[in-house]
Length: 501
Image (cartoon, rainbow, N blue to C red):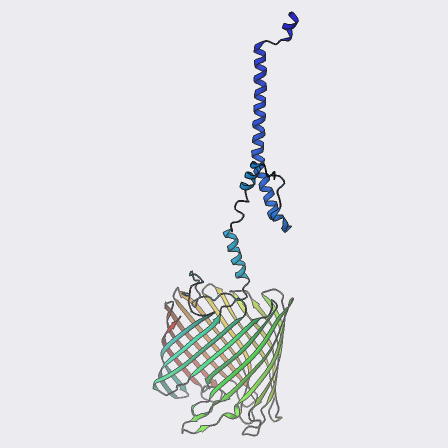
């Protein structure tokens, strides 16, 4: 009896042991459930990310072995259906669409056309209300200017003046293609003399250029152009005491191929120019034929540059030209056909908006077929650049050296050195000022003719009344002088309106 009582536990102890056991079981089950709920989403997300980002393309549809795939397990089906990253996989991310559009824009070889006044437009590119007129895949930018002005010409002690109305039309047509580019620039001017000496001289010019992007390293350009001008009184070939000087028609054709060869830049080109001259009208009404000056010039050129950096490219250039006149022997018995040789070395600079252009120095020689004509040789300096030292200020300059042939008996021609500079400054938001200057020196081949100089100065203001209407004012002064002859001064002033689109 005593032994049986000793082996049977009392009731309070049994109750305590049962409570402890139940507590341990409940804590263990709760901890297991918490662990499963905490780790299952992370494992599913990791598996999904690995299948999406893995290098093997077949991983996109890979099966996640961390999730049960038993068809009878309803809980597994529910988990796979609601797992993070799989529910929204079929939807397109807007950021991906935007990135694709940006990449397509970066692939464009041509930048989109800016506004006519250089301001950034906030309009939709798909609309046609940006500056310029869209014509199919082209942008047309016309501008019409009407100017009323006066001109005073002083030669020695003689002075003449006139007032005139000048109409000018300028337009450009530019393609808006992803690859290749076609650009056509045209302008024309017509003057109507209101009072004084009549000088209704028309001027016109049109140039077209087609750029072909043959590959990432090769581009080709085709050019064609025409210009109509009238020789001025100060021109070296102008006829003295003439009422109307000769009209000059110039036709140009050209082709060029450029290719990048690593750090080397190679360019080859072929150009053709034809010039024809009209009659000169003397004071007594007699017409002087100038057709003996009609000529054709063909030129072949090549350039090789070395890219020290994208902003600095030194280069060497050489060219050969052949000039052939329509009349092999002119009225004075001279054969003026000639060969022209030119070499130069320089550097190209491209620093974006701050500075862009090139400068080169070289040597130029013209050898005539007629031994009675002296060869012309001269050192050359050529270049052009646009410099913006600060925002709103632009300085453009140009240097050019060329040989100007003549039909004067016994003379070969002259070498002309020309330099121009234009300073443009934004004074107010809608007011821009401009100052220009130019100098031309003509050195003649014979020692008896002194050097001729042509100096010009000008200033003007442009007030942008609206994006489509400008008010322009300008004053220019030009002086031509040569030792042994009277100097000529021309002063012009005008005010006009420009309507542009």
